[in-house]
Amino acid sequence: MRLNIVGQGAIGSLIAAQAYHTSVPCRVFTRANGPRIKVSLFQGISITLPEAFAESAKLTQNDCLLLPLKVHQLHAALKQWQPFLHPDSPVVLLHNGMGGYEAAQELGIVQPIYSVTTRQAAMKVSSRETRQTGMGESLIGRWARPGEPDAHDKSVLKLLSACLPELHWHPQVAQAFWNKLAINAVINPLTALNDIQNGGLLSPAYQQLIARLSGEIAQVISACSHPLSASELQAQIYQVARATADNYSSMHQDVAHQRPTEIAGINGYLIAQAKKKGIDVPANALLVSQIHALTQQ
Image 1: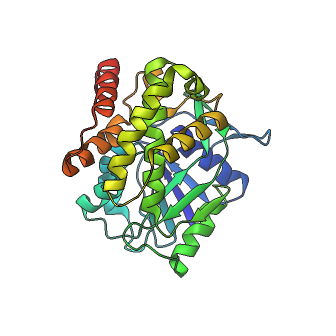
Image 2: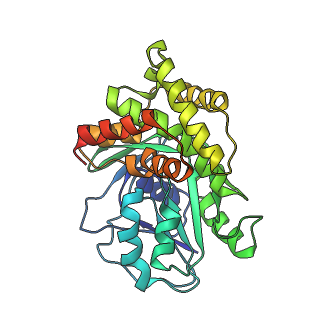
């Protein structure tokens, strides 16, 4: 099976480099003729990716389409690729926040849809260079058909495992996405607004706000049938902040480089679910308005 990666973002470039390093057949597609990207991996290996393709190509049943994009980019990307997909081409969504599967549903994508959440991390040093900044577990599953993997699922898992170390099948991948959303809803906006690395949130100055946000987030997620306690969430937030203390969050980097953020797919998504459940989330609403004011989104 061949991997087809859409975009030249940090995570997409990291996966492409790991694919080439492990001899996985791989192509990268971008909307314009972008530069060749040099990727520095943790193993001390530096890989310069081949030139990306500027136009979509017809895919076969042996092609897997991977979209490591922001949620707000997914609808347009899926619509662009929809005519080029074989009925059996697996489509893999890799993003922060929620709303990717809903975007595929809105377009009537009939192909097998997988979702991946990862703790792998990378940062674009420049338009021509990406550096790996984090390692960790990645999870994959299917929203439409929870449960253990079938033969087709296992072939997709095998392909991506060569490019994403520590990739595991999750029978209830929605739960994994909710867990990551909960952590990102605190770490991402707070590091972006305060211009700090993730470890900066370990300061006592943020303890009260983190507790307030955790309480709101846990209440909303529990109301969406995924039980989560505020204390459990706070422990996870501090664990991630310690483990990635020297890293900058993706939202921090978006703000620093004046790019659109994923706030709508993270805290914005939580606020929308809270409204449906009749839950008040003023701390999260304030974060969204502050990020919008900072970026004028």
